[in-house]
Length: 263
Image (cartoon, rainbow, N blue to C red; front, side):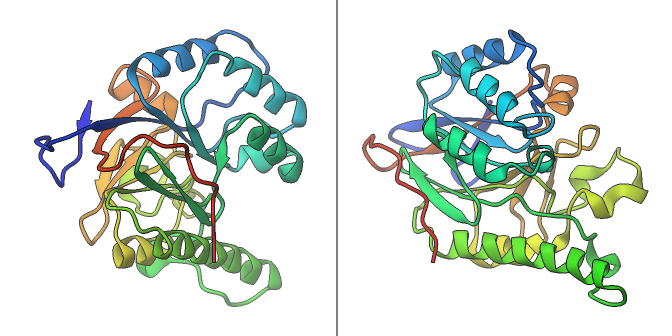
């Protein structure tokens, strides 16, 4: 179990346990995912999913994913991943997930149990001086623009979130340190440092992402914010189970989650 580094684990008052996972890649096989949700239900107060809920983002897969959640009575907040976009049915699957009560974030935020969540999928583009620039063929410019658009979504989500405790959910990585272990040649397709300015400007207690199945479990932004890769297959190898528990103080009384909002 992790402790909020701001408090050193000595916070007075109620604590909220957030289970965070990514890349469960539901493909229709029943059983394993339901077992994961049952374990989360026993150990956590909130479930956060950092993308790739399914293998191809098909309506049938998402309906099966939702059925596997039967019995999970916790608040659930999520962002979509690249696999969830594959079938080009984002509107349809988003409606199914929201119909189940899942708070789906895409450049907006929500408050659950007094804890603030800001979320976006993110995108690739590379890191630091090797970040891809908007130059040359139209397709390169469109690729770069997609990364910039996702960074702007995250900025909007964070600057309109006014809770004491703030957690960021992404699918793509904002730093290269949590990608170490993957082939360096594919780093530009696993994340981008364009996601960093909103995090280090507006602040967060922790950032969680997935996508890099054989990356590294944690790192920090240049501003010192902890970043965790919560791809389920990586966590199985490093901590022995497919989700991470992050414990945060909850200063407010229990209340229903708000609807996502954006400006």
